[in-house]
Length: 281
Image (cartoon, rainbow, N blue to C red; front, side):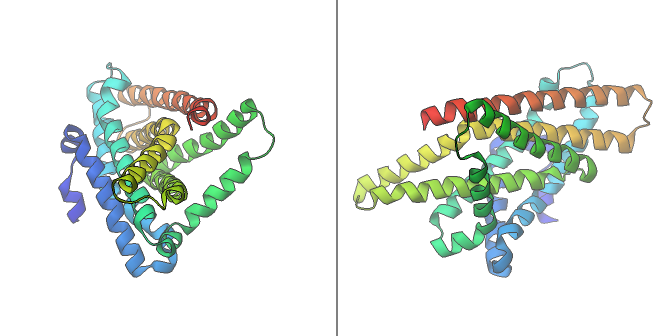
């Protein structure tokens, strides 16, 4: 596989920004192929193709991280897994950036076809949080909904190895649709601007859109990434070790710490989404 041979875990962890470019490149290639070959089903096909391109690196990264737990079990989880978490996060950000860019620059008809399912998902989520509801109740709803996604990340990663990458890519596509729609909607008020002012307007709205979703979106997705890493490491450990060994106990302890950390980060992301983001935007 051509894409598989480009990156490996040590190289990707030394050059995390390249993983941002890789994520954007994988997403762009997937969008082109899905619109070209599977236009009517493009909404899900481009998510699948983007995930498929990432699977080899994600699988080898999980294998690499499980070995690291065996070699250095006494070191902290931050020290052990920070490079891998950075790789995951940068690839996700690259995908989100590409999805947002293509939603913004494509003709409305093409963007509507490409992000049809994502748009329905956004509408459904908005309907569940509208109405007379207190901030505490809203936080509870958001946290419980996000916890379901986190559990799916653990299960998919545990059952399919790198399977959680599909959940992460799907979330990136939803964020890309939401951010792109925000840019399109707010650019209407600058329609009469010309020259430099028009360029400045685009930059302003694009930056505002990115910040609006990044403030709570990055910690939320980071929690999913931590959970996905935990599930994948556990999956690798079960395949490669006897249940009663000391090495497996070390891996299990590390996985437990990762899951607890992911829940904590997810709760913080929910607090930011409910109390901080509405205040800023």
